[in-house]
Amino acid sequence: MSLLTHAWSIAGYLVPFVFVLSTVVFFHELGHFLVGRWCGVKVDSFSIGFGPELFGFDDRAGTHWRVAALPLGGYVKFHGDAGPASAGPSEAAAVMPAGERAVSFFAQSVGKRAAIVAAGPIANFILAIAIFTGIYYVNGRTILLPLVDAVVADSAAAAAGFEPGDLVVSIDRTPVGSFEEMQRTVQVSPDRPLTFEVARDHKIVEIVATPRLRDVVTPFGTIRVGVLGIEAKSKPESWRVEHYGLVGSAQLAVGETWFVIARTGSYLGGLLIGQESADQLSGPIRIAEVSGEMAKLGVAALLNLAAILSISVGILNLLPVPLLDGGHLFYYAIEAVQGRALTERAQQFGFKIGLTLVTALMIFATYNDVLRLTKQLMQWG
Image 1 (cartoon, rainbow, N blue to C red):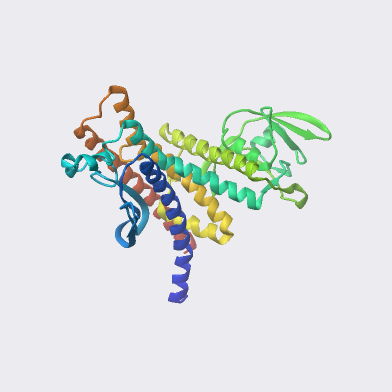
Image 2: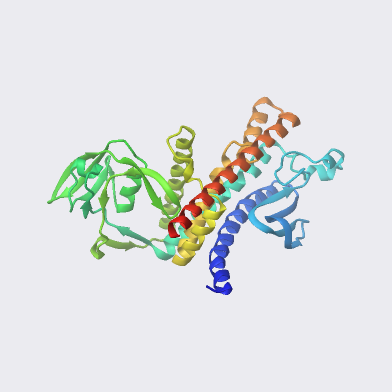
């Protein structure tokens, strides 16, 4: 394989990765930026990426917009902040003229500061809803009927009495309109009895089945979910495409966004109590790999990945870890309750802990990526 071919192959993963991550980061920081401006705070700089500046410009309000060499994040630096993380006022802030102090971040009320910080994750969720809405509006939704074409031997479905030809009508009295809806309900219900109503020979039959917890390989890695053991053969007559107006598309998008939030929250909760494996955590290498694969499937698949990643970034930033947006919100909640901010020493100590935790998480996620790639290379060899 020539050097040019290698370079083209790497670009096939790198370009989609930079596009997806930069889009998610841009909208996250844009949320901070817009609400900050709305609250009357001066923005010193808006950066996509870290490290040396590749190019930039100053707008009329005095904000320096920059694109940096390392596209693994970004930041908005508000006036008076000691650094991009808004960890506290700078030393120069103590001697600021009254006019400058009025437009600094640290001088705002706790409510305004909380709104500015929360705007980043909220922007991530709004971006996901917008992307999902566009996909549904343009492409519609391809639906596979919840029809049982085969039952896996020795599975939960076989034990419960499912038969080929069964059409799932409802689960726990909730109507089921597609095979995907059935899968999602099953996946989030491991080791929990579910009551299925199925249409069989022109009659409704009730079946109680308990999905079993299993490891399942997905484009985003291996996940542990509930598995029933039902297969669909994807016959042409089992498929249909539904198209929606803008309102219907937006409603579906909100539902899809909420599902991803709930599934991610469930995983994080399971991780804390030891029911989920930390091996599922992925870092930038895995994101780049999946971005390249999604790009091969088309623009819609790549945008879908961007929406899912945007939701993940929003949730991650809401965790009550100092240094992240959720950590700032935690500090502001304490300030609102006790009527005064935590001491600077306490805040700086918290930020050091947060930096340690975030760094450790990134190292561990990257380690998972490298380990997985090493196993793949050994198998190929």
